[in-house]
Image (tube, rainbow, N blue to C red; front, side, top):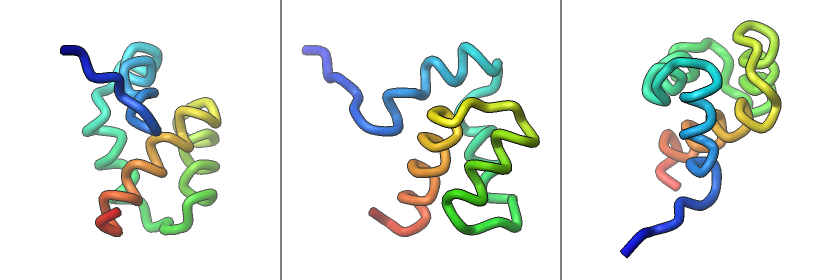
Length: 70
């Protein structure tokens, strides 16, 4: 039986393919950033690492959800 991945994690395969880094590295970058607000982190990924908005948003949402235990 195949399970369909939904939500932010559904972007992960295309993020890894497009930007050439594993998701764990992106999450480590987000966690090590002094920024804490969602949109600040999204904008930082977009400007400093050239990620598209959707990809940056998915990474930040998933990482922050882990942090808060959601």
